[in-house]
Length: 325
Image 1 (cartoon, one colour):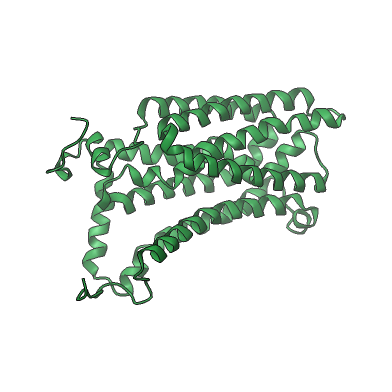
Image 2 (cartoon, one colour; image 1 turned 120 degrees about the horizontal axis):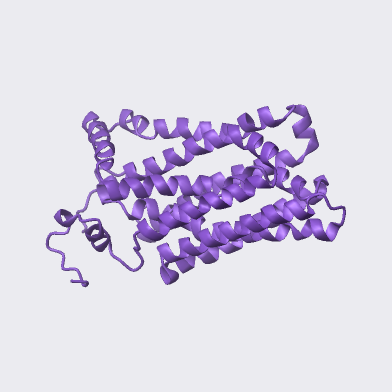
């Protein structure tokens, strides 16, 4: 080991494994927190009358305002591979990466799961809570800017606490079961939210208006408990090692594309449908929940070789004796 030379690793990369692991965890945390920060900022700004008045935000302009986040994501993804290649990697690596991405489309189980999970993360209902909380609170009869800001902050703190617990429980409950629990919880709470807005949305009694908040907190808790921790784990876990970059790219691209489309359409849908919008979203969640139940592959407690066996990749597990045999 004394003669080991790091010819292909920058001197800036720590040689101490502990320090390196800490930095890797820090990068993962910051990367996951960035999107959540964007959503929190957009919610906070949308609550302020000074912001909405200055930019003249209405149903037509609120969508493009929120869509800026997803446009940046899509543009950023397109530069992830070319820039490192031009900074020193050989052209053959770029060609191999393109081939790998194309190859991932011929893996039906993985392709379906990557695509479907990208759809789930954006269409399950969290999008409206993250970017259109002001609109929901207004439907609930809570129009005071100070109160809306308070609720937004409390929801973020609640989500943080729940997602920490959910991250630890993934290896206890299991990926598939925990996702199903969250999906069922989100479906039920959206039905509750639509019904309560219908009955008490026009009420002048503060107790009834604040009662509508309960489904919002339960919904966000269900999402943070199940979907949020899965976004950083499942899309890469189910892929072969050589396909992980491609699989993550497919997942992110689907999510960003749907986020872009929904940014332009949600304002009109929520204005035109009102409380019915949440019932429609809940009904759509039933379809997504059924997909998770029938098609999601459980990977709890499995080594990478065992996960590969579940997808029929026997050719990469030669010499590995599965304990399940």
